[in-house]
Amino acid sequence: MEGEKQEKHHTKPIRCIVKLGGAAITCKNELEKINEENLVIVSSQLRQAMMPGWSPSMKVLGMDWSKRHGESEVSCNKDDFVDNANVGSSRFVVVHGAGSFGHFQASKSGVHKGGLDQSLVKAGFVATRISVTTLNLEVVRALAREGIPSIGMSPFSCGWSTYEKNIASADLAAVAKAIDSGFIPVLHGDAVLDELQGCTILSGDVIIRHLAAHLKPEYVVFLTDVLGVYDRPPIEPNAVLLREIAVGKDGKWSVVKPVLQNMDKQGVKTTAAAHDTTGGMETKIAEAAMIARLGIDVYIVKAATSHALRALSGELRGNIPDDWSGTVIRFVS
Image (cartoon, rainbow, N blue to C red; front, side, top):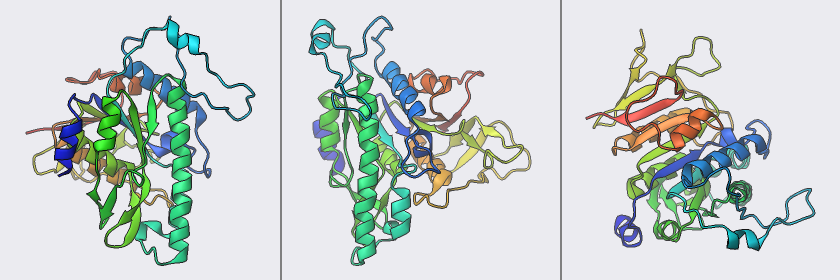
């Protein structure tokens, strides 16, 4: 049913779905602190990838006309828009994680475990949504300042819900209409209603998989706080960056490059922060493998690097250059 609704509204293909990892755009160990430097670079790189017709000689037409903290003026010159030709943007969708926003509130109150009949859980649900939508607004504003016509879209407000933490209802009509109207939807991990346990946390990674299945992008990029997927937590000595992971028809995955000695092919060790209610890297690999199984290449790469820009720009379709650092997850028949 969702597919039929989505097809009705959505005709042109999507170029890319981007996941901005919470750990890449926030300071994960500092409550509700945005990594401003990374967010600015990520937003600039997204503009470069989305607007191939843009050149450095052209002025960035900012779309955030609200007052910013510490500034007395609002930046808006309508003549800039009259004098400049409209540079069309590629059809992208952005999804971001919560990082240091939302996870604290959710884990303190047990929102991910459900139980809306408990006052603490209900309060935590409200507190979690205040936190994640605050971050969503800041991400939308950062993209808008780069001239990206971004629109914040919360899964809860769009009527998304789950059953036993799996997506039960997710009408993509609003997302598809936004794309077809020339906007860039910006979704995020959210607290949502769950038909069985009352409520839960819907992670950005699960949202991306659902969007990929219905919108069929050319490729998907996960921007993280590390270079890619490692065979063990990257802070451990001798951690090896996995450059290519192959996914078979059955959904099982194996490491293709580099060839690893004495390691179970699926034995990648992962860790999740104590307050992370969405599962950490293990969930990311599983979700990425499900996307790759659809025949869509997935690139996992460090945010705000030249490697990220190359992935976002679609440079990696085909053979992966030796000088590119990151992880590619691909379907192999």
